[in-house]
Image (cartoon, rainbow, N blue to C red):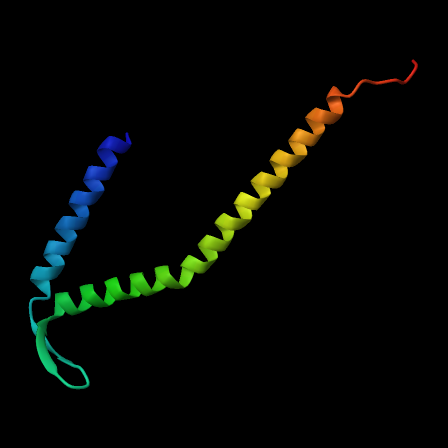
Amino acid sequence: MSRVILPLVLILAVVLGASFTILNAGEVDVHLYLESFQVPLSIVVFVSMLLGAVLGGLACSGLVMRRGRDARLLRKRCKRAEDEIARLRALPSNSKV
C-alpha cells in the first residue's frame, strides 16, 4: 500500500509546486541591507519556507538529541536490572518448605 501512496504524494507535491510557481511568476523587490534584487515571488516563498524549516530543525535538534541520550541511558539501566534479576534467580535457594 505504501508503495503506491508515497509516489502519489510525491507526484501531487510536484504538481502543486509547479502550479504554485506558474501562478506566482510575478517578480518582487527583495531589499537586503546593501543590495536590492528582483526575484520571482515563488522563489521568495520557497526560500523563506526552506529557511524556516532549517531554523526550526536546528531549534528542535537539542531536544531530539536529549531524548535520544535519555532513551539510551534508560536502555542501559533496564539491561543492568534484567541482568541482576537473572543473577538473583540463578542463586540457589536454601529456604525449607
